[in-house]
Image 1: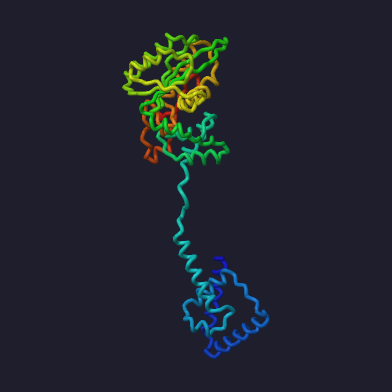
Image 2: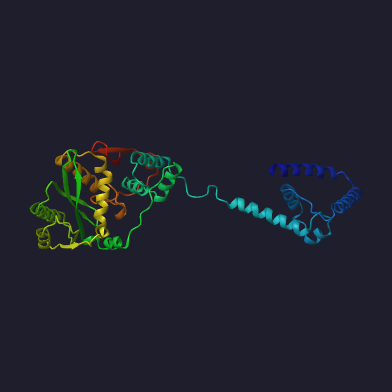
Length: 365
């Protein structure tokens, strides 16, 4: 259209130059001849509309817009004067719209280094969803939205994990988290077929996990001693828990409840066949199985305790927890990186635990 409009402008400039040496009588004769040709053209069209191109409309609107409306009504045109004025209004509106249109629409594109880091984390951790990846980025001080991580994975053809919704009971536990502990036994089997029972406790307020031990025979004296060790650990950490949720497993003796009652911790039994009443602990047991035991061959009790201690250190010190705004139990989230230069030159180092089973990511020193 612009090329066509420029062509019309140049040709009409030469037409104006051709009119300069003509006399007024010659110009009037030519005007009468042109008006008669328009009448003949309208008669041949038989009421049909004349089709103008966009460049023709722009040229006529620019040429005739300065004339008064009464003059336009006296002129012999193929269109009505109102149509010419409408063309001019549209031309001005398009010019103003093009001038006010932003040069770059939408939000700025995510930095290439962040996109590369998200894809790297997704490739090295196949079981992580986009919210788990988002939490790991916050641990590294890279502040992006969870939807941005989702879009990066979608563009790369990597399916993100679905967002999980919480139940009503989970909302209640979250509101009472400062005073709640939860405990449970879980089982695992070694390569020799021996069955081991692991006892663990989790704090609702910050998701800190404590693995109190593993044994082949969880006797009453062993469980009671684990309760005493728990009380001492809570006193050393300054934790003021008031309630401990446990199920109705027969491994818990009466002495276990008495030790906790002496320390000011009331034992709350979960309902029969209602695992959601101990949902935080059940969720951790699932995480431990998926991220550790399902991917490890356990040789014996010593090997199991070593693996669990490493996982406990990783879980409490580095892993982001979605239930507490992606914070870590023993370390707060760092301040987001505000320096654009540092964002564009991310140097992230990987630290492996348990032979590369668990990955920790940190900025290079």
